Length: 460
Image: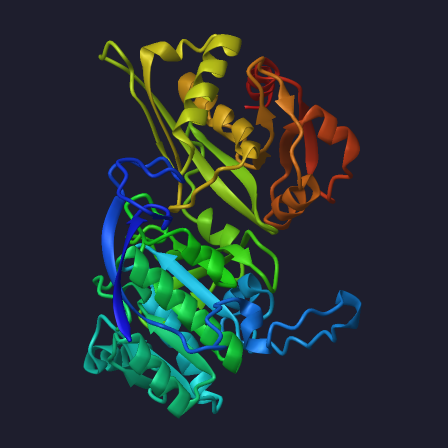
């Protein structure tokens, strides 16, 4: 017997409430609770309704010591950078959520993965809820791969699962999860209830059949995957595609991975034939670095376990405004404002008279504190109109007192700098005493922002 059920769901966090509220009690978001009517069928006596991962295995309690560990036979995707982020390849029965801005390359990389596996003799089912099979074929023709992939234009969850059981693919690709809807719910596709229930059903189905599943998700204006946060909790792996659409460089960031390392980063380049691996991203990021120009400093940053050399640029221009502007690209604006105040106060640069623009070249985003010293060096260089040494790199955290503090992965940063031919490294004083420099790299210890200004004046 089918009976309607009315629930009140927060569109921000997915929490359910017994009545309508002006403010969600879970996430404190205002005007986010909406009413939804669902159709639910009363379960038969003794039937399982749990969506837990253990439901596929019967849910029998076991001693951890008695559990036999299954070997993870990973499937290589054909893209080394993607395998690096996934921890070696796709695990059978795993569910991966891929998010990113529109046009960043989510469907492209999904079709490339499917084409590579299909060419190896595996059955791939590509469910397209936004594009027709003709449009998918046009992309396959452009990429030169994916012609053996089976395309299914469908948005109904029950039909998708039925076709998947009939075809039995090794990989099920859903493009996108926001277009899928279940007949058991009356809400529109893309709503919180639909996204949550469809993702949970696909996850349970993947665990029961050991069928790998790739979900493509839309993102909000803030850059987070659209839908409730539970969507990220129910899947095994969450990947974010980043990059400037006007640039060919793409970053694939793993923020969650139950089968491998987290915070790993893969670097790709978008071309006419799709995405290709970038073996040495630091060389590409610094290829167009200007020589002898003030306001440019090189930062050896570490994203996950991946070292990257990026160029931090700063421009200090005399302001005609009562309140000079502070603009950043690829950096935390609040932290950059604090660093400009530190440089102004500790080094006497009089930055309060200048508009300040700071960015990271190449469309890369850097959030770690190790970027502080490179940012300050670029600001000092631009304010003094004096270039920093061309063969120097800078890293270290800067405190409010102007002191330079140690950061992690110093050896990794120094090795990457030495590999690309840099000869000097400005780094925290305590770190310079602890690490052994690579051959050909001179370590220059920096104790404070004032000391950095003096050193730049001596070696400039």
